[in-house]
Image (cartoon, rainbow, N blue to C red; front, side, top):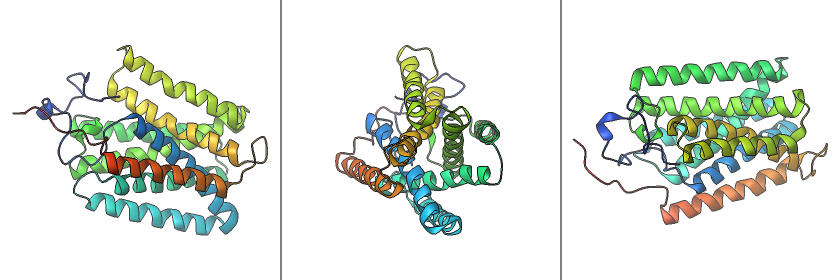
Length: 268
């Protein structure tokens, strides 16, 4: 899904109408491989967070999550442009920490429906602040420090929201992990179909799909790992399997560079 091809004038980054991609963009182009790796990170984040919690306790798990996201953000913000290993390493770290953020709220007694609503509000406030300051929510515009901060705050909020939403459908609505995963897979496909039919703004379609990747990947990860109405593979094996998938995907991107579209055209 290309995010600028059909942007309305209110959402486009006006100085860059002639460019598909800024040369110092800090995020990848959106390709099929992007979505595959994104879903793999959500599944890995869910499984690895549960693995750490069950085997080492919540204190150690949270410490690992904080160290991971702090390190990932440090390298990402220091990078001069999009680097596949740096970017996807940071996304995976955010996936783990975002899972912990959503699960931690539930541990203290907040129901899933309330945490889902809370993180939806947080995400909406971030979007509002981002757009009011920058005039665009397009990921093609991520080449300044302010926009990068808004972008990663948004990514973290989407992971927390998606985790809470997935747990809500599986537990509160009693759909179970597999049915939840299938339902979110269908919902994930809808923004792409709507974009293809020309009935949705590409930026809105992207962010809707982005949020839905979290409960999609997490639901299938829980189904694979859980011994209760699942395949019972265990969180360790599921973390390893999906983690290796991420490594394979990022290696492919690092070699082919298919997620770095060459700039073309000129701008005033």
